Image 1 (cartoon, rainbow, N blue to C red):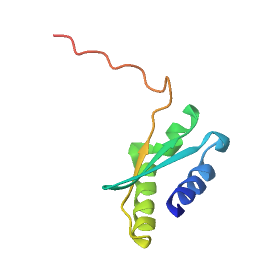
Image 2 (image 1 turned 90 degrees about the vertical axis):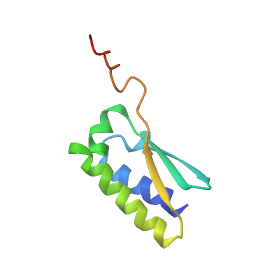
Image 3 (image 1 turned 45 degrees about the vertical axis):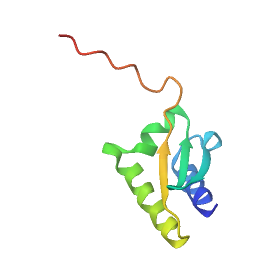
Length: 91
């Protein structure tokens, strides 16, 4: 559970709407999966330019996982209405 608390602490510190941060934790044979949900307005901050912030958070979670003998993965959930549907390529 330290991984979940750590993720919440990190993300709540960088977003504008910390009350909307939720983390769901699932454990299976592949390890630990943390699913992160944030306010739609905070998605850019969490992902960062070219995914740099998300990559850094994943690296830190891997370190926490190693200390606790677990493989930790992060999934950032797309908020409802977050991304416009992609148009089909015209032929």
